[in-house]
Image (cartoon, rainbow, N blue to C red; front, side, top):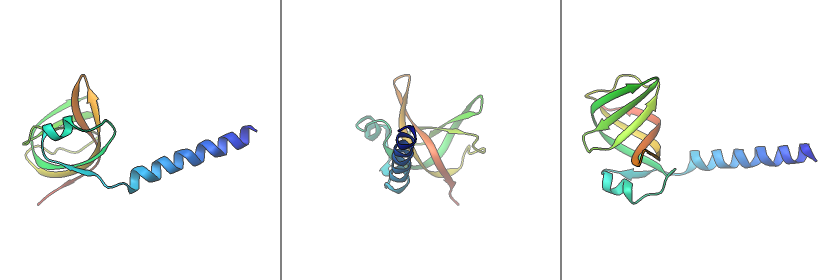
Length: 106
């Protein structure tokens, strides 16, 4: 019985990961759009990084469109144009995007 429950739970986790990777991200260009979305939605954002703050191993970037994104172990991105895919989370009632994948442009 335990083995059956274990197999079912692993199958469920696999399906959730598959849905997360296959789903198309919603393009976002302003903080007003973010406020109307639900947490944990997959998002796509582009912009120029205008500020960067480091907390332990997490960096918080602010883009030129005032969107805040957080990234663990990311390289220096200050003053670079980026495109990023991530999911929406709220930190102290402030929406921010937790980055899954980031690319620099140009």
